[in-house]
Image (cartoon, rainbow, N blue to C red; front, side):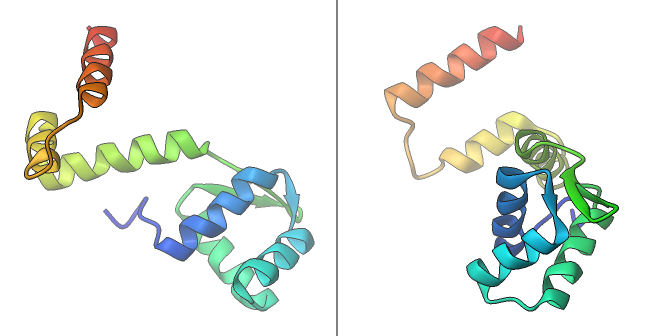
Length: 118
């Protein structure tokens, strides 16, 4: 699952990019310094990792996303279910809800999602 997986700090850094894009490399360095106390080299190292994963691109010093935040989390979630639950969404939901009953609002939302998918 390493292809699309991000650590907590990488995800926070990605959120900065998604919120500000398009963003210059110089501006991103300033934002990362303010948010994480990173040096320029750290910012570019993490950015390169995220670019190598295909999430962002750095074209001529301007950083933009190759996939939206929503697309990233949808693909990451699907990859997780595929690798962890052999692609079984019911098995994932059973594990997710074990020990924590769904609220009426959550059940209604899941029903709406199922109806929309049919």
